[in-house]
Image 1 (cartoon, rainbow, N blue to C red):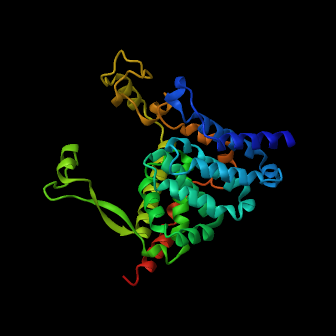
Image 2: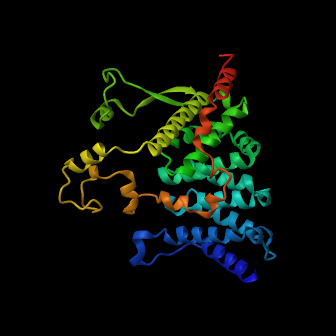
Image 3: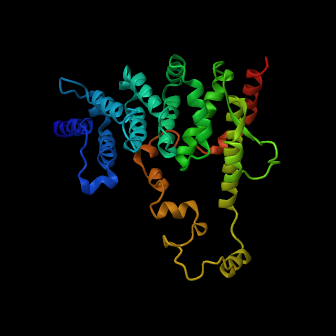
Length: 336
């Protein structure tokens, strides 16, 4: 036990020190922070020891808070925070009872980083920290957002980035968190508006917005709709996707369809299907992930922290309980 905790503290001290990358490693200067964060997360396998250990100067959790605060500092490179969201998610899942006074500090660090982050993948991992907190202690996270006047900011980003989320568990975490907020009936959520459908500029007439059009007319403008209505729309989309996926798993492919697929010439004859030099249009998202150019979604599904989460076994068809959700939306807009 002492050896484990001494290594834990030594790793924290390393992560609290600025790294001076050698000239030969300037292409990946964030590796020490990223690898160190993943290693620190591995120590949470012994969460009970981490939660109760102290070296007399600080507790193990306080060291983690210090590391997270440093890596999420706005002046730090954004990519150094790539795995901080996962680290915090593991802390919330395994040691939420011991976090106590640290919750506000952690959420504030996450919020500050979100305000300066423009990398979608990193932004999503930070949003998921709020999603985890909704499941762990909804009252605490709502109170924090009210005190910091960040409720509209967080909910806007959460809704805007939800459809970009990949991985079965992360999608479930996000949409169930949003649905719990909707079903809470909290009146503060009813006052927020978020981006809805795009309002087409004059002369566009519903055509696809090309780069040339964007340069002439500026960025797209979105109609503002109530937050609760946006959450309901996202729930409907995810429910529809869950039903379609279930139907696709049950329905067997016919022999005719298989024969047609084999005979179809897609123009990629002679190209290795997994070659990184094949044209981009020949790839699906899963192929990009397999070649290492995207986030490893399958790795998340094998993550032991994911498998022990209460939401791991939740099927999104549970979102079919939409009539009650619709009643929540109608009730919140009764005075409009």
